[in-house]
Length: 400
Image 1: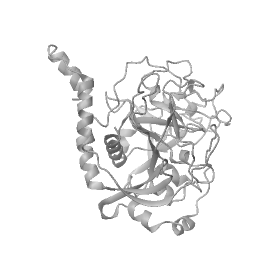
Image 2: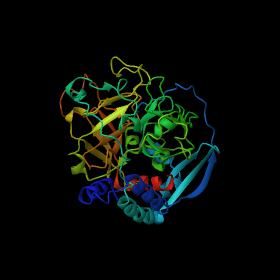
Image 3: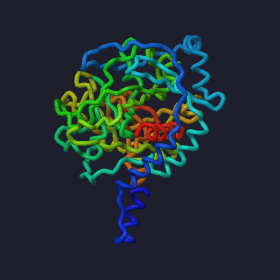
Image 4: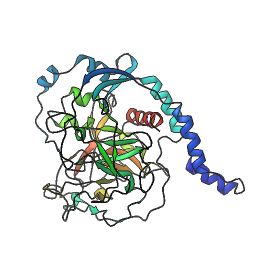
């Protein structure tokens, strides 16, 4: 039973009431049986490169050489990114065994399971308290950066506690108890090798770690990101596939001083509908970046909660999984800078069981000197497509 249905039931039949937590536990148990497990094909051993705890890598977009990119593509990876034979694949990085795999799934089975999982609430956010709305001015699209510091806001704020610092220099958002959506470039160092710093610190606030530090056991990211060489040569076409999912170990919040932080829901819709949604963004800016907010405090989250009132727009279709022809880049008026990468673009517009992640932040398109019009988009990232939303629901069932 959904939270809304539960509340309505209590109003109509107060004597009967309902136990929302018990209902969610029952749904989780039922959903875990629906999760589709992948077949793992070992690809190669990997070396995790040790980097300083405060290491930050922020790729610079370079011009694309289409011929060089086509020549370097791996035929096996191309097969699974295209979804041939009804199977799609992702790259799975096993941090514990220092190994890289191709994880392949039956596409029809994942789609069928997702329909049942959505009915059980697996696309919805975890329950949270009603927090006071924070009103902020419009952002860079009106020629001024209006991100606000979250340093003085409650460390257990129902929405902001679901966002955290990834590694040394990125942002991530929980969409399941053990699952963190971030950017794919955040799991690599500047040479295109896997970084050994793959921690997640929910609601980090300077030196304060209200939910502790959790080290992920693995990461998943799209084959297209690797097959396009985006880990070594980052071009404009990499943006739409720049996402990764950190898999946290079982019971990740057992040592947390404040219990589990909860998680966002995930949602997708057609282009015209997405353009009607109000959006917000939270991230951890690198204070030494030229576009950092001023003043800026390291390891503190900043949020643009109105995103200049600019309607989101999607572009850049891709024929490969998980887009299959739909547009994959989401442009918004959300102010951001280096360090926001991987941070959620989220909205409450899709429904009452949010907040919902509808995309992430990957790079900054313009700044205060070039975003003067209220129709300009200051940042861009990935768009949650239908197929990606279904996959994320499947992962939530697989990693409860």
